[in-house]
Image (cartoon, rainbow, N blue to C red; front, top):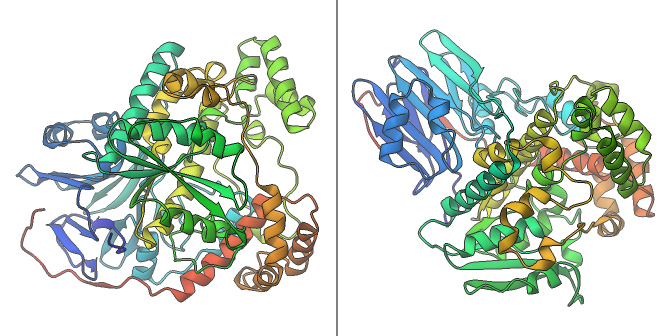
Length: 560
């Protein structure tokens, strides 16, 4: 499979001077729209004549008939909302260009202003190369404190991000951004469950093509559900990771419990080479990958699979979210259920339920969404302080915020995977799946006594009993401590790097935290891996050649 990055973009209407990436294929001349890389099966465009054109980029089941209806629709967002897949849409009608970013952020859209007009693209680093901007220290500071960074910003100075569920509108006069998506009104649980089954089935079907073989992670409930659905459309290779010398228990037993005619099970043995923080060359991406510390393992596991791989990322955010529903239980007078759920949630995490109930009574959904993370890491400097995007005081808004953050990080993983020739897909991040989950009331879709009840109710009949009855999932904290001990000199070297030069971290305190982690002390791993990923990413961006641009000189109108 080609390792050339696939991306697209365009400019304002008007046909004035413009820039295009070196080697790009011009699809429309005015308004300018171009693509780079291999878009076979990932692009559909329609030229309606009279300056009316539309294109879908990404993974979609839309055909010419659906595209024609969307081209003529007064509300483009409503016309495409129910399509399975993860995609962006660009429509040019009557001297206006409308670019839709999907509701979750699986296919990001960025834009920037240049001397010759506004340029949009799905590749933030390329736009930064066009304007001469580098990594944004303010964004990095926000990222180090809380990885759910402001939605309208990219990791590069001067490059804006169209927030998920928003549209970028370009005219001759400039650019504007406005929302096109809002959460559905919740209704009957049974209807939402049926809708989830349809949406998730479609999300998998659209990625399996015409029965082409795919690989999946084969472990817990989320990934096994994707495996079962994918096998309905073609051959599947399920990859199960396990520590060297371990032949039973955990994910291995879950994998063996699944028997399907078109399923090939394959194991992936984890050795010391795959420990967290193992040194591995990190490709440059549009933002720091949260999985940078696992790239040695992640890349080897992807290489053990096939060219198209389905990942279960996002299932925890959708089906086992933070206890934000407690606020809505209190607001609706369901006090006994709120007390019970808070107590069970707190026991599972060895914390007191009192703060949870206090936050629920105050409808402090933001605090419930973070489940009391505690103080910021002491190695962060005051320069990393920032104001996050506010979360509405509803469980639905908190779930959307959580899934969008996960999708943003997952996109960096898809860039990493593409660098080794693997298409990585996350069906749980599809907007249609999110819509289906939000169609249920928060206290119906979340349970403190059942593991991922909505997913099991929707698709549990396809799963072995072991997966339906799962109550928890494993952790890997021990391997993290081992990885720090094995790679301590490498990690210490990262403490005096670019983040320190930008004044975002205190190297001495970060080094002390790493030494404590090597000794097995309790460690705030998320902040550690964020700092490691950001430092590694800055080095990768510095070392990678910048995407190059050239003047657009093709006046003739072209079509796909």
